[in-house]
Image 1 (cartoon, rainbow, N blue to C red):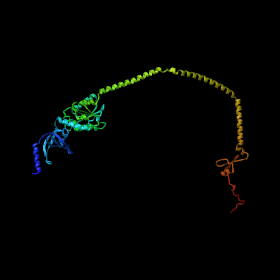
Image 2: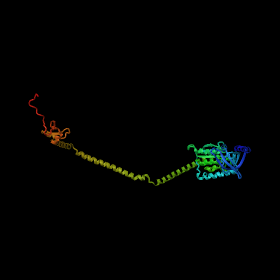
Image 3: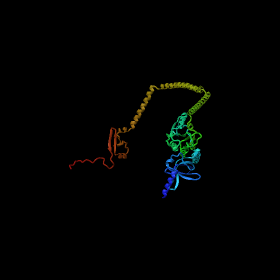
Image 4: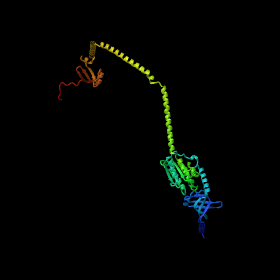
Length: 431
């Protein structure tokens, strides 16, 4: 037979003999390829067997396989002719007991703590009075009802619920997606605080909150997170990554908001203290003002001398005005006696004589008086300036001769030119 025929017979024999097996062993060399399938090895103290988990079965696992974890794998044994080896095709796989779970938990915890995901410096401070609270939990469980009732009793707040599965296949991915979804919301709608909550249960039931994807999503969230997974004695890796751990979901609601009645009482107390403080300052100021009033002099004592001085000045002013009127009236009487009609007539006549003499002098010195004696004076045209020399007359070219009874325009001829036109002939000629 050929090699392929032999490999096929071996494959059929093995699959018919070991069609259903359950193996207990430690995972070694686990890896998941791009196609979605996972390859690993199961080993114990004496042997090693290769294993493969197809893509559909990987998604249904309740945890993320890791090297060193002790598991129980269920499947069938087959052969791989390409490499002449036998292997197990795993359909289901679970951790082998609580001890193995705790060992896996401690290993993952040490890994994440080494990366600083649990550091106290990375914890964010919770808001005192959040306007919106996001809750990541199951929408049908008692947890969400307990949280809503507790918030309503303490301080009613707007609550955004992101429904997820809290256990089983795919629950870890849903919780991580919900945390990232709240963190990716716009600032106008995103919550100020997130509560990741689940009721109590076994370690297997709470294992989704130990998954690395959930822990990393909580640690990377920019919104403060309260972890309220399980009861007070239950502890998950989500509690270490969160900013605050609550022992129960109800306690998480109590940590998220203050008591409204206490807030009102506190505000009323502050108001009373403020009022008392303001009244104390007012009373103290009133006492100081009263004390100052006692030592201040009265108005009459301050203004008495000034009032008396004003009265004295008023009386002196009246007497001064009366004396001034009497003096003025005497001066007026004396001036009225000096102002007589005959004196005024003589002064007016003397003024008229002086005016007439002055006018005669003006007429005698004026140019018109010279013109009456046959003289004339010359002015240039068109400026009208008086011409006082021959050069000025020649420069003016055209002048005006002023006589007593009128003016005559004349033209100035230069030397050598004829002052008159050509003489007329005595006998006209016919030619």
